[in-house]
Amino acid sequence: MKKNILYIAMSAFLLASCASEDSTLDIAGMFSSNGEPVNTRFDQSIAYNATQPEIHLDMGSDTYTVYACSDSHATRQAHKNLDYFIEQYNAAPEPKLALHLGDLIDAQKNFACADSILNLANSHLFIAVGNHDLYFKQWSIYRDYFKTATYWFDTNNGGKKLDLFICLDSGDGTLGAKQTKWLRELLEQKSKEGYRRIIVFTHTHFWKLDESQGHTSNFGLEETYELASLFAQYGVEWVWSGHQHSRQSVIFRGVNYLVLDATQDKEKGQSYMTVDMGESAIYHYINYPSVASKE
Amino acid sequence: MRKIIILFALLCPLMAWAVRLPGFGERRYSLTAMGEYSYNTTWGHHGNIDVQALMPINQHFEMEAKLQFSTANVHTGVLQIRPKFELPVGEMFIETDLMYRAIARNKIGDIVAAVGVGYRMDHVSITIGSFCRVMDDWTRDWHSEDNYVVEPFNLLYRIEVFCRPQNNNWNLSFMFSNVDDYQMERMWQPLFSVGAWYDVTEHWRLNFGAQCKPTGMFHLDASFYGATARAGFSYRF
Image (cartoon, rainbow over all chains, first blue to last red):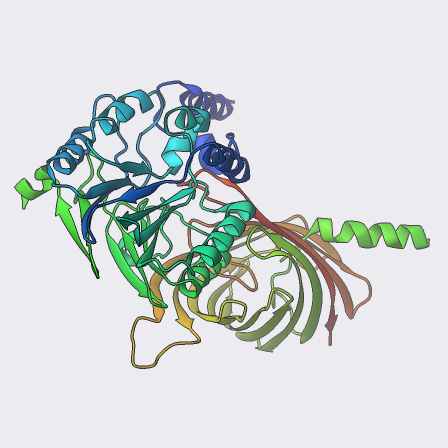
């Protein structure tokens, strides 16, 4: 009897902590999403994109710099590294653009704070949606701030095509049937348009090497095979992602898969990435000051 | 009667899966053939044919060979060698698996070598181990090292619970694992299976199974990814 009471009390505590507005973990969402499925999010993203003009960034040069970070898990109390990333980005000379590869926030009620930090960026900044951005049914809030999670844009130099960037919504660990079809059609079309390189950025990583064991889930195998094949077939040069909180570099079938460290304040080994985009793309991981000072 | 048979045939795929403890308490060779209907958001609707042979060599050693051919143009071969040790209650076994999955649709080969330790009784079977995976590009340039990916360590786990003892003429099981007969998923990618068998005669057994594969569990926003239903028969010599 005592045991049963204990179980009931523990279950009630667990449920209460899941339901609490201040809970940091959406335990229910980890087992069964209670928000919009990826196909719905894709439809809404594409519907928004259709109302907007295409984004063609004239960089005014063949070379420019990409600043990228991931997994900032910003809260109202902890966003030091994200602040630093924006400061560094703002201090960098033009031409440049910035990417955030998802998990912008942790838990709930933090989008306003994180968005206000991103708004300080003095040049282009694009964002991918992460699983933490979707927990607690937060897609609608994410959409209020960032409008779309599946889109593309390209860079050019006075009309001369440079690079194509494709952002994918992988917050569920799958692209879903509709987004995969869209990606295939987009790559089929764009791969013929003479871009210097094609870059895909998304939240979820593709491979489970040593560094990624034990921490995060990723795409199912069927989808891993399919997307790896798709990227290779259409000449994608880079796939940038986050999610596992530790850097990783894999080349498979000519596609460079880079995973970024976390930007989250409390994480060890935090860094962001800069990429010098020219005839070749050269990347650097740059430690946040808290890490650099420890080293 | 025909209506009942048709109804049974329709319901069977909704029932079960792995359901048998291969070789447990079994001294007979058996051949199994299964048909599967499967769907996932990547490959869409597809069908599979499975063929399996169980060879209990002696009381301490058994082998199992499995082949699967899929209309998704993905074909799999598995060889399992399973030393086993009878205990006062149940049986302990070491599972060594070698799996090759030819993903012809993507021109990728997936080789997995696994080793695990298991314990099985009439009502429960537990296996824990690890496996190594190499994904290899069929179109590789042999002068380059950039055409394969090694995932050196993955946790293997399988917990299966049975409603009836193994020597019963029917059974129903529920399984939670990251592996099944023809796939070895990463550790955070669980598979939920249900299975059943019914012994029609001493030699013939009907097998049924169903499986659900979610995506993004534990560290992502979980959603449905795929499902499989299968039905077939075994002949035990």
